[in-house]
Each structure stands twice: as C-alpha cells, then as structure tokens.
Image: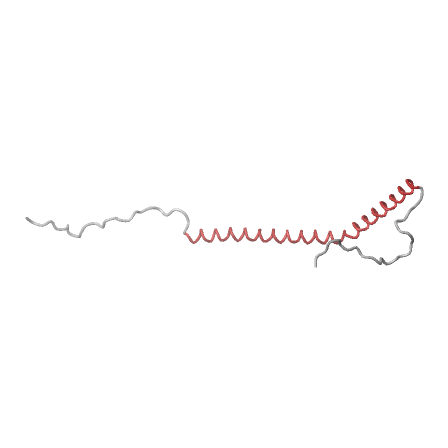
Length: 119
C-alpha cells in the first residue's frame, strides 16, 4: 500500500492563533490615566486640608482678638449684678450690711480641720 505524501510545496500553515482586533488602549496608558486622576485628587485633598488649617488659625486668632471685649462685657455684668444685689439688700433690710465685723482685715487664727483623720 503506497503511503500518502504531502503535496508538492507542502501544506498550508495551520492557523492556531485567533485574529481578534485589539480593543482599548495599551495597559501603560491606563496606568498613566489612573496616576493622573490620583494626582489630581491628592492635589485637591491637600488644598482642602490647607484651607481647613487656615480657617482654624483664623478662628483661633479671632477668639484671641475678641477676648478683651468679652472680658469687659463679663465685668460690666458682674458690676451690674453686684449693684443690683446691694440695692435689693438695702430695699429689704433698710440699710447696707457687711458680712464682716469691721472693715479691717484680720488674719484667721484658727484652721478648720477634719473631725476624723487617719495617721
């Protein structure tokens, strides 16, 4: 029995690869795009943090600058309350009184100590 031989010039090449069209960009371009988007986001994030720090600094300095005004307002309120208490006391008692025996300062000669103390 004669053996089959290849045709003259050989067989055609066997196509074992799929010939699909390339879709999308090369992977390097995706990396560049993602890096660009992240850089843009980090830039705005850092800018926002800087703005928050500036606002906090401005808030602290505004409190520092307004402190004397608030202290003066509190002092006026204390004086008003003190004078109102004295006027109320005079109205109720008919005279101004003092919780002290005299206007002279006397150093206390006794000390309050606890009744039960441990050694």
